[in-house]
Length: 118
Image (cartoon, rainbow, N blue to C red; front, side):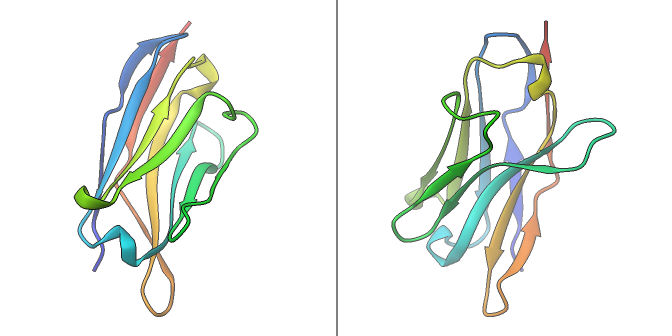
């Protein structure tokens, strides 16, 4: 069973930065993909950024390109989301997701709240 624990959310002013962390209970070498999603009130959950295993290819939502960076720390089994130049529209609950195992199942963390004030 994969457990994901997010941290690093909080309240920040527009233009500020936050770094989210997602600690995993299994080696991230064994993950097919890991990603960050967010869900704003009244909206569907959306992909923010993802990173694949191996060469670590990344992809980002257009709305965060150039501002957010996803990275991984293999030694500590942690994936990060560095968020810069934050905007009020970045507000939401941020979730970490991992794809793992023979059946490539998806596992989710409990989420961390990010609030950006204008």
